[in-house]
Length: 119
Image 1 (cartoon, helix red, strand yellow):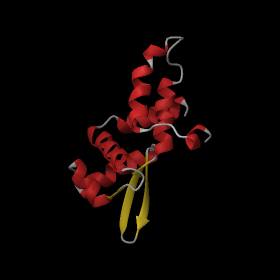
Image 2 (tube, rainbow, N blue to C red):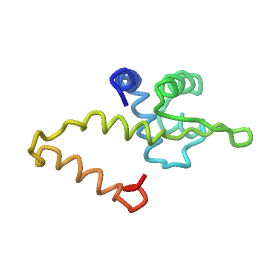
Image 3 (cartoon, helix red, strand yellow):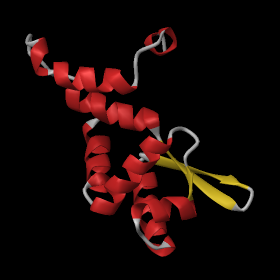
Image 4 (cartoon, rainbow, N blue to C red):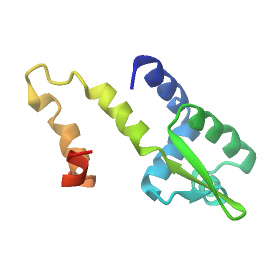
């Protein structure tokens, strides 16, 4: 991720409903949530949801797919990981204890596997 992409991502996340949408989708996992369920989870109308997911999609942070008559939204995990990596890229300056809390927090929910290490 480069600086212009990070700026676009942060601009999209700089609104309360959009941040809640991304967090709800991260919590939901790769299967995502149907539009109606997502709107209910976040507490917005369908029209408002459409507006917000359009901005998040444009920033590359979420994706959608059709399942019959439903639209399912899910987090774009590679983009979210790229944003975290962008922030932490130059972390520590030789002081690993500075980054340790972030590493521990991520490891507790996403323990590394052999597959990810070689991706």
